Image (tube, rainbow, N blue to C red; front, side, top):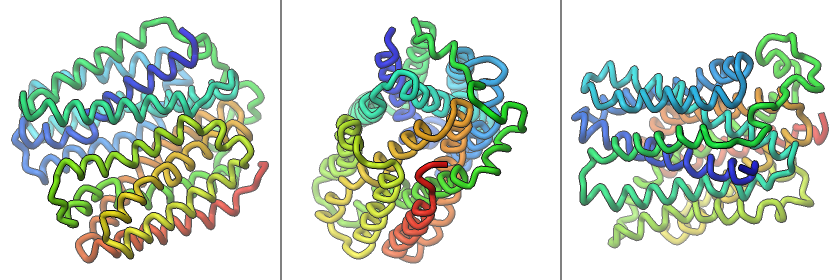
Length: 384
């Protein structure tokens, strides 16, 4: 299997699973396991804590002890067993433990594949944007499928959909893989192979600034990620199906950007892309704060291509330009654990508290956070 086909297929199946678990598992916990919303929230919060710990420590340990091939198979295989175990208990503590372990082990897939994607870009000049498009497509497809099927067969189907998808992913892991998956060398040109984990990051100002920038960008997204449906609902749209269409405009914009990203960013410096993403985020959140209007909201949905997709591509390009193989994997682990999972955990509490005061204040806060991130992005050097 070619590297391009393997990576694209991997993204597609991975996001089929993610698109089942992240948006719908709270529904499974409340309707099938009969937990209250508060109990289900406490169980589901274990996922974010686990992904921080996993991204920082477990993923690099498995890569170092084994290789990407074995780490991926262990992650998906054990993840499948953990997913199956949901069927055998309704106890809140056990469900929390299963969710914690599932987040820690199965969701290692994301930093592992993102790290490989960065290495594919460097070693084989693969079009990362087009490959990543299949992830966004998978997430959209499964959301539409589940949204349609649950009304006919009930919420209990979520369990079987998750098991089937992870089972397919596990089978995929044993299909022929690109040589790079098994043979990648993480020590080449590395001057810190004997250092403790992430020790080099603490000595690298650019790496620290890059992680802080993306962390702030993602922190600014937490209000939107968690409350966008509630915010849209507050506008009293009569046609409920239209809400789903509007919410998916952001994913469509993201997909379109990823498809054409290689040509669009060819002549633009990665640092400039990163700053551009920050400016776009400030405009996006400020507009939502000032204008509580369905038309403004829909237009700002297209900015997701800037605030998320451009920032993501900029990060990948900066790694490809300035970092060696080991550093790329370390930065991808930090990217997943700190920039996405930790920002989500912090943002849930921060934005939740502000939301109770005013929805406008939430997006003003998001704009201010994005502005700080943009200022820090300007301090990143073009070359380390």
